Length: 164
Image (cartoon, rainbow, N blue to C red; front, side, top):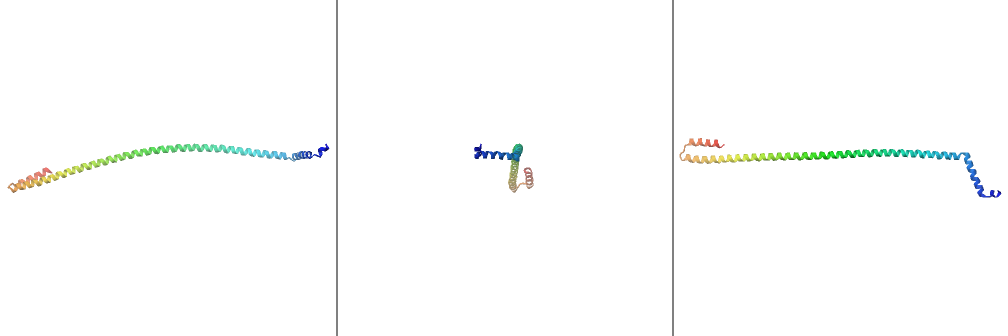
């Protein structure tokens, strides 16, 4: 046994055990355990908070995805309504243009008819004037040859009345 007392391994082992016994007496192990327990509780609380935050984030994400779908549906509805309105406006514009063209065509045709009627009247009036001038010339020549002047005036007035 004496040989064991001269061995450094023995003294190191003995010092090691004495160190642990003194530590146990002082309560280091209790403090170490308490510290580890507190650290474990802190980590557990952080994990619980992280799980709660993750659940809140997932709920928020689901909410935003639902809102996005609602907004997309509303945008599609607005786009559809806009297309319908545009088609209606195009149809209305085409119909109004068609009516305007028909009205202008009708007015142009009326103006052409009026111009034709006026031209016919002008030609007739001009023909009457020519016929009157010719009649006067013939009658003057007839009167110059000895015809009745009163009869000529009466015939000229009668011709004018019938032609106009």
